[in-house]
Length: 179
Image 1 (cartoon, helix red, strand yellow):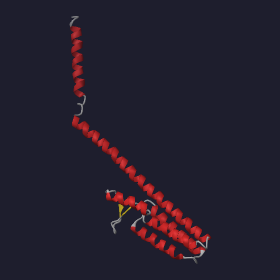
Image 2 (cartoon, rainbow, N blue to C red; image 1 turned 180 degrees about the vertical axis):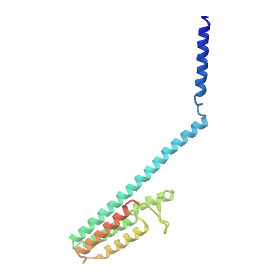
Image 3 (cartoon, rainbow, N blue to C red; image 1 turned 90 degrees about the vertical axis):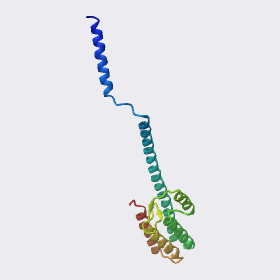
């Protein structure tokens, strides 16, 4: 009898082990493990790409804010400096043009390089051109304003210059407000 108890305990333990083992999920196959790692890696890559695009958007926005600030500074200087008014108005018009084009020639060269590599943002429905912040309609309005600023001339009054500054503020704020 004494020898049957250890055998019975061993038998019950083996049966319990077999039941527990049969209920555990099988280890994933090498193919399944590779597919899971690939999907996880791709998910991380997608997150990085999305963050990089968001970073680019914010960088371009900060560049546009810099142009707008410079244009506003030149318009204020034009109101104070009658002798240098024309030069300030021309500089303001150039900065407004940079806003309209989402960058000066150096920035545009980088954007063209990215576009050639297939990196795009928003596409204007009418012109099929790529943009980040400034739509085709906003670009036209900004270029019209730049021309108006450049034509203001040496005899522009303080009221006219204030009106141009206010027009720039309205156009700019509208352009950089997320859609």
